[in-house]
Length: 68
Image 1 (spheres, one colour):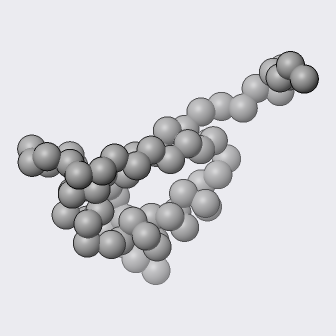
Image 2 (cartoon, rainbow, N blue to C red; image 1 turned 120 degrees about the vertical axis):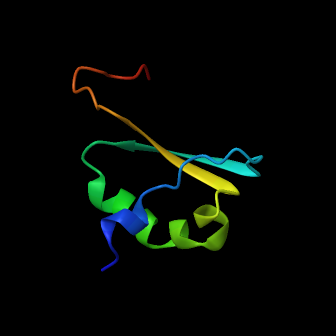
């Protein structure tokens, strides 16, 4: 298993970012976010900062019911 430090997103560099990937998630999907960190977020383009990946986590409201 990779070190948690190695899986952290690199800081945004001062150079131009080629692509920003936003991943929408909820707080209870920790295992899924870790799976992304362990797999495709280890590519050199992401590690170098050329591609930035950021998770946007939110809460699921049980009171919300979408209109049908």
